Amino acid sequence: MLDFFGSDNPDDFMSGFPWHPHRGMETVTYMLEGKVEHEDSLGNRGVIGHGDIQWMTAGSGIIHQEMPKYEEGAACFDENRKDPLHAGEGVLFSSGDSVLVKTETSKARFILIAGKPIGEPIAWRGSIVMNTNEDLNAAFRELRNNTFIKS
Image 1 (cartoon, one colour):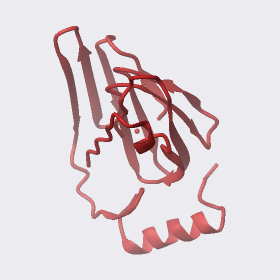
Image 2 (cartoon, helix red, strand yellow):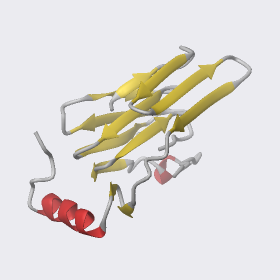
Image 3 (cartoon, one colour):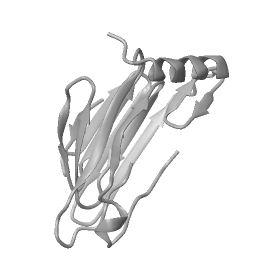
Image 4 (cartoon, one colour):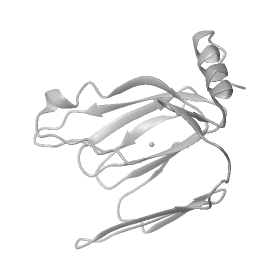
């Protein structure tokens, strides 16, 4: 899944993405313009800006938020491990069987994301990905019962 969020009107994006859960997935945030402040239930927090990438692993469950920081004249941002990769570093990042290669110069921007197929059934609802609907129901039940985050 790839989402793009962009607008010249701050009213369209300043509400950001308040606290929400993820489980069973990895999200990548790549900032084209602007800045976003992120924070999660593990205590990680920071700001990513133009050209930065954030890779978040949400295995057993995490709750996080990504909130734009207003800058005059800035447009918006894209959609998420809280390992920021900063612009222009020419970074190779790997997590398990997944890899991210990023190169940015004054003339070109290149991102390659690759991973091996997991060969498992996928059940998906909102920001939670599991193998079965039963697993999904259990995750949402844990979210309602405040037992979603595992130690």
